[in-house]
Image 1 (cartoon, rainbow, N blue to C red):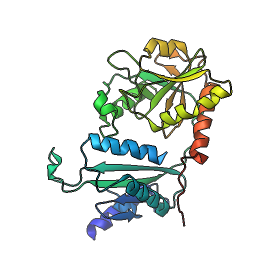
Image 2: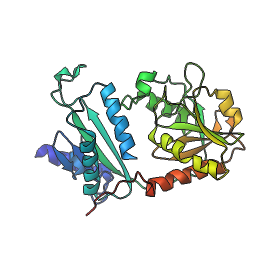
Image 3: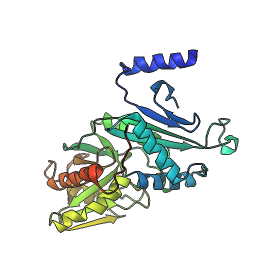
Length: 297
């Protein structure tokens, strides 16, 4: 009881108010249920779950106890229990509690955790600056799987912030544009073609893939001429041949980039095409076919 009381005191003091919870609910397979007390939280859904389970298999984590439908049900129930209607969810699958050694042989069973994060998400309609990452990017095996090896991401973000930028852009060992930390990058060429780097050496962002699926609507409307992915976008081509550029990720969903290093992108202003793409994604998030009904009480 003393441990729980101290956890509650620490949680209340750090949040400033027990009536306003940034993390309204958490699920833990170790504790066997949904937790509504934040002091106990010490420890497009289908597309995300597909990537999640594929990554877990690559990491050789046993997913047997947590089939896709079970995970989906847990996350929906957790969201409903939280009462949170504006925010996000995050979740993790690990080899489970064990002996703190490198091998997972000392972990008797995998553990799944999820948390609801209350947040007032809004569309990003302003432009930001990006810089070329000085931190080496992950090799393809680790870059293409979702995992918690975020140190390169953290260091690249800190490096960008030190230089007055929002985030960094990684360039691979061949000199081609790759991705940003936790985000993909997208370009609109002078011919009004939307281009993203292919996902064979970087993380296949669910938001980026959804963008590629929705963008043909702008082709039909005559705003874009084509939509494509390429594995050979050079830095010079991206900087000097693009009229618009943006970071693409679930929390943005489209964040226009108006300057990369010392190069101005286009006319240095937020372009209408990235804003139109942002509107498409935003509307899809609110009312698209992949939206999941949450049974709030």
